[in-house]
Length: 358
Ligand SMILES: Nc1ncnc2c1ncn2[C@@H]1O[C@H](COP(=O)(O)OP(=O)(O)OP(=O)(O)O)[C@@H](O)[C@H]1O
Image 1 (cartoon, helix red, strand yellow):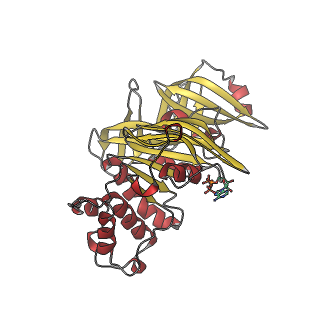
Image 2 (cartoon, helix red, strand yellow):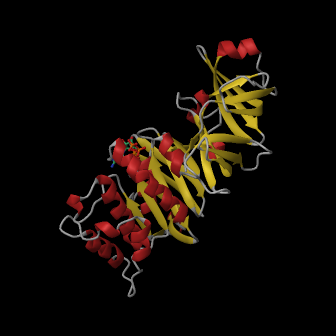
Image 3 (cartoon, protein in one colour):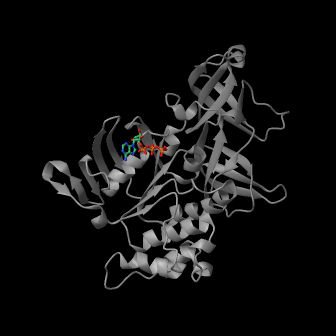
């Protein structure tokens, strides 16, 4: 558990946050430019000397201003990965990693092999940083941070300096890391799709304050938060692979905790029982009052309308409960009126497209 209550006042900006973050998994710090994401991470690292408050990580107090405790940055067992990996250009990847281990000052440094394996660095060990792609450099930077055996990993927009192709190459490594790491990660991002792929927990910052914090799956469908207001609004649903149809290359995804609800999605073969996350965009969900049997749409879910948000001039967003899983549907206000859709009503949600995010 990370208990964090920090304040910082600058002439034109104030950070004031009170958070309890999970001890494992990725907590995304999400917000607009200038909302204080980097400042928050820097305060956690002890780099904002004027930050006041209390910070406790895995039972250890790193800061307690009232009690006069301030563990200096170099004594906080954390790894910090920035947009641009700051590697030593004159050292090979192997020697850059050794440097990471030395920082711990341990007599017996950790075995590098698991981390090298986890991040696929074996083929790169004898190369120098200037011969690596941006994504490869970031993998080395993460490995170096992990070899210092941190209790917490901070990542500040690690994808920001990569072009789209490199991002696509690098994201699976981050996903793998997400699955294997035992320590918590605070991950700064202003890209919601990126957050959807990596985060378990989401902190939404606005003007230096926490607008909302909670499990990703709970925050995304909230009609009162800006997360659901954009064109790209979506939900993420946890599911397991219940069947695989090799003829049509479709996986049946059974929603966890949802009585009998499932969706078919295009997928390469997957083991039965595998846990996956499904991303469904609001604009890919339309509503009907009766089950359609002559439609090309493969996936129809019975659902109840639990919230409606009219978004003038002509749009509306419906929040649905599909047997315990939340969905969003983007509609025009005209179709909302024509169908007479109201909160509490049973509808059939037609899902045009389903993406597997891991
Ligand atoms: N060293 C500094 N001195 C004074 N003000 C700063 C400093 N660093 C950041 N700020 C200001 O503090 C506020 C929060 O900045 P911060 O970098 O934490 O935001 P952010 O959410 O990380 O933004 P971005 O997504 O653009 O990186 C901004 O108004 C910024 O201009």
